[in-house]
Length: 138
Image 1 (cartoon, rainbow, N blue to C red):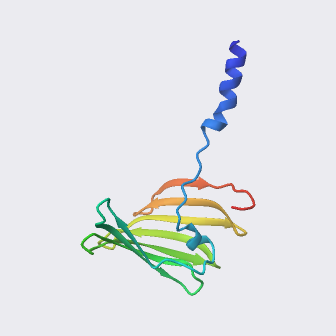
Image 2 (cartoon, rainbow, N blue to C red):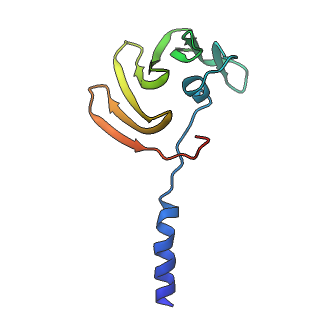
Image 3 (cartoon, one colour):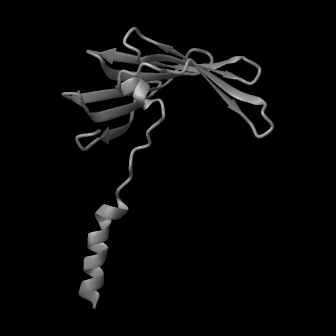
């Protein structure tokens, strides 16, 4: 009986350790060429009042290059910039409303498949390294 329980516990480690990546609805605008893209996203509360606004800019290939945020009064609240190398996302930089770098993500590809992402703080210290495995569909 102890052997069976031990076997089941050991067998469950890979399952319990599985954490799927958190992906955003905006990923299509970063990783693929999309023709119909939004220029603005408005977040409203239950009463219909504007809480937050994000405005988007795209390059000539239709890929997202800047996301600018503002609060309910329309005051700037930071931005995120995206850089591309050979058509592939190479970095994402998040800035606060004072223009100071808060976080940077560097993306590494093998061919056209995303394989690794390094997350650094505003001072360039490495915080997290993601290794990414995906099927043929990504």
